[in-house]
Every structure is written in structure tokens, then in C-alpha cells.
Amino acid sequence: MSDVLSKVDSRTQLAGHNRLEILMFRLNGKQLFGINVFKIQEVIQCPTLTHIANAHPVVRGIANMRGQTIPIMDLSMSIGQGALPEGNGGFIIITEFNRSVQGFLVDSVDRIVNMNWEDILPPPKGTGKQSYLTAVTRVDGELIEIIDVEKVLSEVIGTEDAVSDDIVDAQKEQAIEVTPHIMVADDSSVARNQIKRTLDQIGIEYTVCNDGRQALDQLEDWLENEPDKVTSLAMVLSDVEMPEMDGYTLTTNIRNNPGLQHLYVLLHTSLSGVFNSAMIKKVGADMFVAKFAPDKLAEAVLQQVNKNKEG
Image (tube, rainbow, N blue to C red; front, side, top):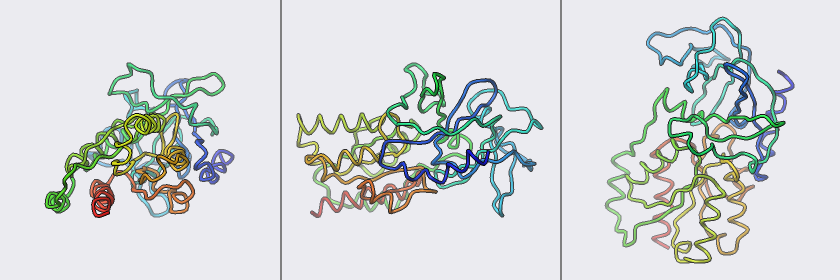
């Protein structure tokens, strides 16, 4: 396990190269699953857990680690499969994303693989809205299912989607002749819905794309056929982790295109634990906001929208 974890420290070097590392693991059965190493703090053998009363059914208990109390979720049960056997060992994947730290119980950990986002594909059509897959890929000919852990977390702890009344009221008082329009790129249906609810509350129109490749294709199409849409676009709001093309590479492509390079790019990422200003500067983005805080997102969007209006 130490060999696996030793690779985690080098993960930030992948930023801007359309690459990622995924940790592969198993739940119940032979199927391999994956999670982006960017989300992982560490992997440990399952310690003794303290059960808590009236917890969500998938929460197996809490673990105390270096003075921090961390909820531990049975990932197999979380995605609708059978619960992992109790007292059967297993491993805990300690993750940090969406401004929180939590652990996921898995049966076994396989290895970390370095991949290109172009090899990470959206789930097959027909998987449905209830699917917990955010992407799929193949390693050594074997199908790897990338789990949408943001969806898992939102179902267990819930999410706050309401923008504060003060922000909404202040925006209503602004005299806006033309409704601002932004582009949203995010592969998670949960995240897209959260973003749309936030933007709806502050009166911002949007075009939604499911990944960076789709967003870039749409921008280039507008640039060629409807250039006014690019000129009037208030910003590009992009996730970082996306199949086919990640948010870093989307930003790099925008900056390298003379007709798009003026666009304001806000990266909206769950990777709050490892994201920093140096990485933003490296890929050429203007700002980042950690998922999911509706007030912070609304404020960041409105700041740029109002700046455009004044300009």
C-alpha cells in the first residue's frame, strides 16, 4: 500500500496536461472501480469504527484520525450494491472534496494508473439518471467504472442550493439591460443541477455542456458561425475533472485561441484540498471556487457580470 500512496504526492504535476491518475479498487465482486487521486488524502486499512445512532444507512461509523472525526461510508451500499461484510477488513479511502473530508469503505485496493483524460469516456447512453457512474475507461482491456462520489456525498449529507436573500435582492436591484449569459461545463449531473439552480436564482442565463470537449466545440462553433455569442459571453464556468477533456486543458485551449482568449474562466472544482493559486496561474484561469457553496459561486459570477456591465 505504501507504493500506491507514494504516487499521490506527485499528482499536482499532471495539471494542464489533460492527464489524471485514478486509484482502482473493488467492492463486492471482481468489477474494478476508480476514483481520481486528486480527491484522495490517503488510503488505510479499515480501523475499528465507532457506530453512531440515527446515522444514514450507508454510514458505517466514524473514525478518529489525527484529532479529526471522519464519517466512513460503505461505498458499495452507497451505489446500490450489497453492503460490504462487517468485520472483514477492507480499506478506507480518505477523500477531500466539496469542502469536506470523508472516508469510503472498499473491499480491496488494486493500484494507481496514470491516464489521459481522452481515454476517460462518458457513461454509455442508457445508464439513466440513477446511475452512479460519471465515466468509464479501460485498463489492460478491463472496464473500469469511475464512481460519481459527488453524487454519493450529496445523497448522504445533502446539499445547500439556496442563494442568500441578500445576494438575490441585491442583484434584482441592479439595472441590467441584457440578461448575462455564461457557459457551464460539468460532467456531473448533480453538479450541473446545483449550478443551474444557483444561476436561476440570480437571473443568469446559461448554456450547459457535459465536458470540456463539448464546451470547446461549442465555443469554436459560436466563434465561426455566431461570433456575437462569444463577444457577449460573460464567462466560462468549468469543472476540472471531466472525461475526454478536463477543465485545465479546456482553459489552455481557450487561452491559445485568439478569438477566445479574452474569455473569463472560472474553475468550479471539488478539488479544494489540492487546488491553489499556482495551479490557476499555470493553466491560465482567472479564478476558482470550491464546490459546492451557492453563495460563493453566486458572488463570483455576479462580480464578473457586474464588472462586464461597468466596462
